[in-house]
Amino acid sequence: MSPRPTPPTNDSRAHDYRGAFTASGTRTQTRREIPQVTAEPGLVVEDPASGFCGAVVAIDSREVTLEDRHGGRRVFPLRPAAFLFEGAPATLVKPAPGAAAGRALSASGSVHVANLKARTARAARIWVEGLHDAELLERVWGHDLRVEGIVVEPLHGVDDLAAAVREFGPGDSRKLGILVDHLVDGSKETRQAREATAVAGEHVLVTGHPYVDVWEAVKPAVVGIREWPRIPRGTDWKTGVCSALGWGEPADGARRVLGAVRSYRDLETPLIGAVEQLIDFVTQAGPSAE
Image 1 (tube, rainbow, N blue to C red):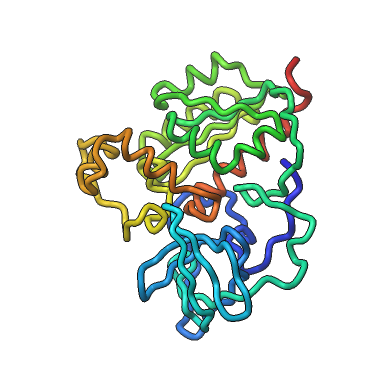
Image 2 (image 1 turned 180 degrees about the vertical axis):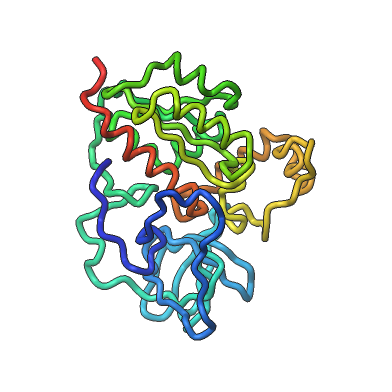
């Protein structure tokens, strides 16, 4: 992948997400531990008093300007513990002068490569379950994928995943990474992932996240809700969510969810870790395909 800047210690990407495929293990803080968060452009925070959630677009020594997903902007004073960052109170601080000089970041947080000419696609691939998964990866990691020459393909489900892996024929220069929804102990997805890995061993890596659907890996505040609805078993998850939230049909919900995502900061950490592990894995696949 393209080189990444060393992130500040208060940045969620400073943690190692490898193997973090469940929602457990979130670090808790005592009441006195109010972290300072550098208000870099694109940082998404919430003003708990008004409920306004948006990305940082400007900041000075006294106030910060946030822009929400609809393009609306509001100015807030900089006060201690005045904002919520990733659901917890935080104090926003102005970036050090020149801290970001000379480096532009992509939506995934990697260093943006100017005047990029996409690399010839590798033989390696990343598979995801559906079209919405592929669109979300493109929105956040698209720049990285083009730098590395990695193609993402939707599977439209993971039924008989082992057979699909066998047909693909992974190898040293043809590695295969697979992103699976609902990868938790005892799920059918976990069983299918083990069977797929057994087909080609070290040439296949399956990672995943604990959410029923990739939409649920988008932070609720990003789409203007406090939490994702609980959908009864037997009901299509996307259909149930759209009905509960009054979003219309799943296609309408997809436009709302995918359109709200600006960067990796809008996603839950298990998904971030799973995707980046796959990109690291397949970029070791050897020379580009002819």
